[in-house]
Length: 424
Image (cartoon, rainbow, N blue to C red; front, side):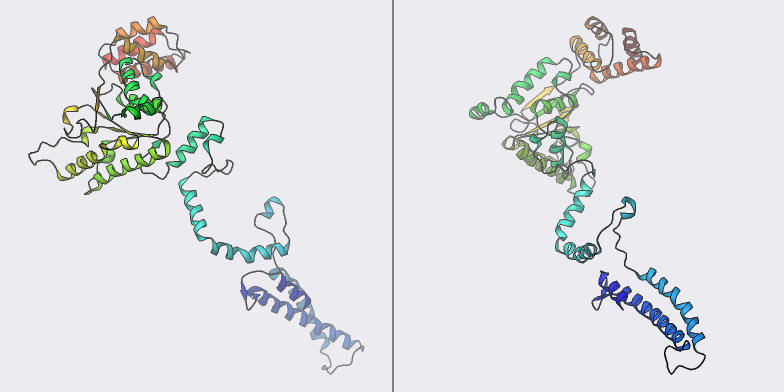
């Protein structure tokens, strides 16, 4: 009985009438085995003449046989139904835990889980939305200024945008220093866009000057997207890049809803970070020209109208919209008028000096042994090429270095790259 009560007091959940179900079953087995053993001992004592009982003559042998069976059964029941107080994982690290602590923790687990369902759901959502790394501290709510590296600040800023539909980047990997040539364009953007939102912000507000929305237009491959990314870096503002294909949908009203979501997210980001840059490539596929003869598709009209509504008040939220297109004439006249998109910048094919600057920028991060004169001579051989073409020339030259197992790009490699591109 003492052993059985010890089992019962040491057990935790699940319970039945205040006791553990499997403890009750095990205790019954143990008591039965103990009873069998007790009667067997009593029978042996009777046969020895120590005790006088009313047991039938010759019954001692039968009880002895029962004892032979009862003793092993007692041990078996003890092993099967004894309390296992070893915590999960203790076999791996060798740790043990006091049985009283195990019982106390077990009794409170269900109460604690039931009392905090909202927190449990919150933690589950966080595990889904953010990468799990037990070796790194949780910096979701940390102040980025307390971290000592730029990457920590970028990670903290990026975590603010993880629940948004569009991909917002806290910073891009290019700046005006990476833009080869185009000095006049960079100066123009510095004067009209960067200063009113950065160094001369208060003065611009006093004068009623705001950063305009912009359209970069010109032939394909001239670097319109590259310049937009560099502009976002110079502004130090979060940047979202999308294209007309990202906003188009076959479902009714969904394209207009996507446009609305894009600008609503831009306003939210701008309120948090002091401004935002929205870049939309292939603008002519979304802001289509409405010719007024009734032939325009109704869904296209909804998208254009949605754009017009948001372009009118971007300056009130420090949002800069930058669009890029190869066909300026295909855009809706109401969308590109003054007050909605004030600045239209033509990004044409680079001249000789600009091509040399592009080559220099492309070679800056690659091992090479070319000087400025080599780049100028190479640029003179690339008349008519755009920035994307010049990037490919440098890539081809690098492949030749790899093919000959060389160390640096040489003048001959660059010439071979130009020749290959001209042939293709």
